[in-house]
Image (cartoon, rainbow, N blue to C red; front, side, top):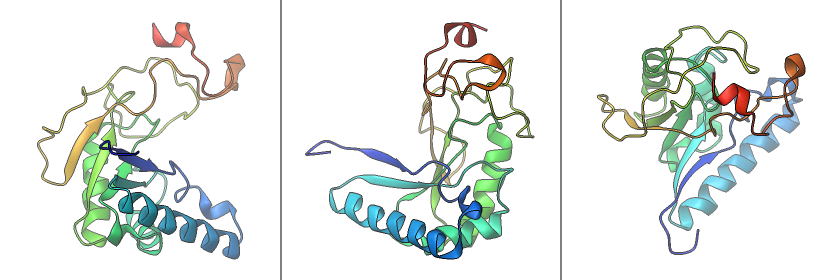
Length: 176
């Protein structure tokens, strides 16, 4: 980060997806995230701990996980990274989580949520997605710091259905 301003989205899906871990490994994960918050804040970064998507983990449980992971020391949390849920559902869920973690603000990844769906559906390369709200800090919500494009448009989620490996550029998907 050096002497430049930075916004860090910390560990997408790490808290939301940790239920598959044993209790000790879950504690190690939240401890590592908490440490990362401290280190990056000390370097001057704005830090948002990821909260998965609005249909993955109930708000009360996500708030508890964020509390354990150091949300009090972070700038807030992020939602919808690489997901497709619309702004309405993200703002409702994020507001619920925020209320449970001391009013922390959040950001929403809007790169693939232009259809404004309210259910998560297929997570791996669902067809017919549209680019959502352009990056802005003018969100219309006092709790939402920004709508951002985090995931690269046209990037594959994985080899499901014969698609390219995760992270690879896929022109056919980008141009749909």
